[in-house]
Image (cartoon, rainbow, N blue to C red; front, top):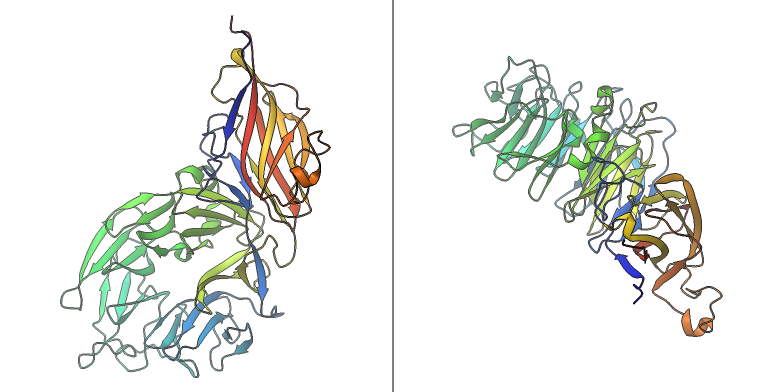
Length: 497
């Protein structure tokens, strides 16, 4: 009795990017190479969303830092620091206005938080900038006097106090409050500080409240500060050899604090660290050390976005690695040159904004749709060499079906490489038109019978010949979205003798 052809379905492609192995030994659901795609919880692969320019590009000033500022009266703006120029305020309609008396020193690197119905911005050079929504005040640096803070490079709001780290005493963290009013944010007593291993040659670079404690990051150490007031404060060395090389990559999520170290991306849960970047470490390990301190990160809708300078010749962050907390997968973007990113609750929902790190004078917003400010996005997804776990002597692949979401009257390209030879490629196009015909000039019937109003495009890619293994690449460079739902292969049995 003849052995029938075997259908092998690969309907889960959402295993994410895996750079730890070669294109043969990663899992069938993973990819050794992709760009500008996302993986959803169903296992589908979709072209990423784009960015839209908000406000008008500034012809003079570089945009350094974004700080969402929502006051108790309900007004919400996005503050934009511009070293050498006045800080700007963007309202919910994206209109920009300069804030009087808010100019920061040129080439400064800023950090800010919102507390006590005011925004507070530090950069280690200028005195603390306080902005209450109408008036900006530059604080002095004489500790012990009202409206004076020590110079600091990092700032956090915790236990109803401001904490200020770095500055002249690189291992010192100051905190606000007077004896009469512990919650007074305008004053720092001369004795209100804690030193974190001041003789280790390291420096405090980031302060992040998480759970009921303050996390204090140095470049090579992590401390926690526990307690409710100066009498009960206790500092704990949580990790003696791991810290963050890039303060702007530090971002809290539900179960920890994400950060980039010299050894990759980790999450700190308040007691221990967990490596998150294992599958992309080969890429992170090749980043020039001098590029690491410009990296930034943000948590948005259960994802961690890590912006890094990977190409090397660029003087800005040119690559984004995105980690999905739900699926545990990584993906990779390009064409988002983000210097600093922030989540702005503009109209009742979270939205991701970022400064343009290439020109450094624009603000972009993540938006649904496959364009970057109206321009095309080049996206691709590549499978491993698929041999389906069946020895070559038992089978030959002979036919391929692709499944896409029906999108519109346009096509996506599919490359099929054969026989473990990257150069042996057959290129096919698949129409994503819901009213088109899955079968092309099929003898099975009219378009109204087989092709009208489809939700899923099932395309048979014929003329491939046979091969012991295939590698599939789906790609386009357009303004059109696409979603790859799965692949099916027909295997032709071979003589088992």
